[in-house]
Length: 142
Length: 65
Image (cartoon, rainbow over the protein chains, first blue to last red):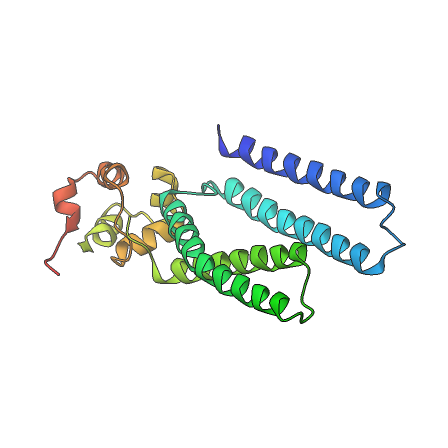
């Protein structure tokens, strides 16, 4: 599959996800009734749209200049960052799960499990982004 | 690892951008290889050597760490 097709595929998947998310937001009757849920959903959808726009614009710019969007070095960086992010987040998640269990045992009010899951995903994503930026500067071996 | 990419690029009047386009990688990859911060795969090393009309032996100098 060439890179232009991959970029189109990426944009199509994001458009479908945004469309489904928006329809679900309104069809579920959440929009306008529950402010917190509406704001959270809107922020997630806006973040997805923003990330997709940045990635698509950068990809188009690279393709127009004759460079690939991804090469063996960027793939090596992603692979290393993904492996390290998974490894580090597993320990963090175990630690947070312990805190969560302790809070529940002591009947101290804490976030509901669904929101803890969002925190875990956020932590994992942030670690991946930080490690990617770090490895891009430091370099990786092939 | 040291390389003679910069020297050979100059000989053939190629910029990092030109070399990157010819072998289908990003410019940063050439920069990192030249600075010894990225060890390319065998295929990429072969492609670079081919564009610069040399052998891999001539292009890369490995030193004992």
